[in-house]
View: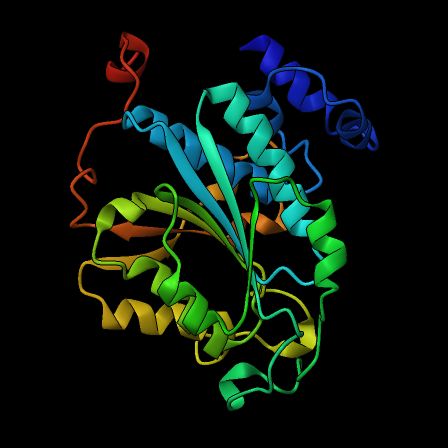
Length: 272
């Protein structure tokens, strides 16, 4: 469309997208597509999950932040969840997991102790709780124990992983191991924060989050956590976070093969 091409060019002008974020006008779907959010990766993940749920005939999803720290991300997730839920008519339950005491001591070299250490990113839990909306869950404690005992209120649709360590991330993947597959969507959108920064981390598939992902895929025949192939090519304005978006695929999920392509010739026929 001509209007879309004009908008794409216009938003390349320095400062335009920043101004748009301050005055968020226009359709939510358009703002998600153009990344007009302080955390566009959260907006993309939550909107994509809610849209998938709606196409599958579901009425609610859960969205999660693993590693809350100061709480800015969880508060942003709350706001995005409300906007998306109101727009698409989907109930969205928000949950944050954190130790509440900062990072534990690293287990071994895979936790990249040359980058992070015990006590990093401590939380003021009471201050954060006072800022959260009544429906938001903040679950504190060792992630292995809290994830194992937690029961989601609706199918998990989006997870932001920001636990830094390999060991903590591996434990958090228990979210995908509940026997009841209704606890998650057939395709769960995931954002991994610690794949890029800092440069001296020298991220690779044998340490950190990348190692946790690789091992999960090796250990599960019918579940895989995969990057969204060439996502940046579909974005109006490609960004670094495009390479940090993954999807957990549950190939044996009862809804995995349900067709979610919109109806209409535009989607089902090749134009002449």
